[in-house]
Length: 385
Ligand SMILES: Cc1ncc(COP(=O)(O)O)c(C=O)c1O
Image 1 (tube, helix red, strand yellow):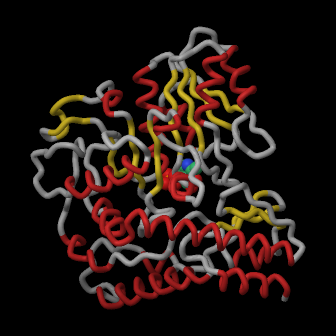
Image 2 (cartoon, helix red, strand yellow):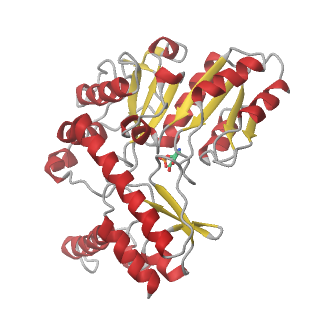
Image 3 (tube, helix red, strand yellow):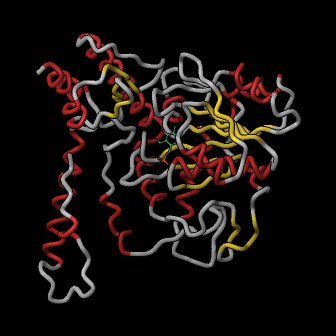
């Protein structure tokens, strides 16, 4: 648990001259908060974030303003940017996703990636209905409101994945209208994966081939792609666009992500030359030039093989956790190939100590790269005492 200072201790004075403390005291206070947050690496078992990284060698970039304003694919009139690195990161993910020529950029996180995908779909098919499953991320109903799209939450099966019969039935109630569908690859609540090809088939059965299919692979994309037996998640399985998180399997000190889309489709939204001399084909105007450097640095270090090893570590740890929690009689369950284990929620104090998210009477353990079998053993020891 991180104990932040009281509001009075962090209030910003109108005039700092002569106020108590000064920069040294402020730095000491910040160092204390940082130490507490770093200490949580040892107890963070319940959230899909990776805490295993160190970007301090890139500290030089903390005293210059970089800005990747406009399209990632061309320079703007602002010359302090890192678009070459951004394109290298996008190219890595585009190859992984099965379309090396895909358009893409580094986002503020999964929500922006989903917004971009739905916006692109809505611009391609202005009268489309937006569909996502009932277990979709909470950003989707909000995105529907932002884009003023009719929204249908589709029922899920016992595995938490979108029920294709229900999708067919719901779309039949909108004859003649196109569809934007968000398929989740790795739901936040249990790791379920929607069937991309099945979604296209269900909509064809319901009478439409005007479909934009967005894969929300924020959580599960890298796992599906790099598991010992890879599973469908991207372009080759029928997606038109997809979002992957940067701070989950890869790791970053703040939320970030990557969005990809079919290059020809992005023409629909591109406004030439209006973003400080660059084309406007992203959601935000000014864009972060620092995050592409972090992602590039980590990807150069790990490569595809290192990421694959990392996914293997997470799945092995999840399997170990499932076994140990079964031995403790806590009825664990885990979707096939997922790193999320649901189990009977322990007392609130244990959940708080291990940052376990609870939904109803079940707790989530998510085996992210920093989580090891030692963490699981210590959690089980705690459960027993
Ligand atoms: C499946 C899924 N989609 C979208 C998001 C949203 O990502 P962000 O919090 O980076 O906006 C998350 C975050 O946990 C997620 O798990």
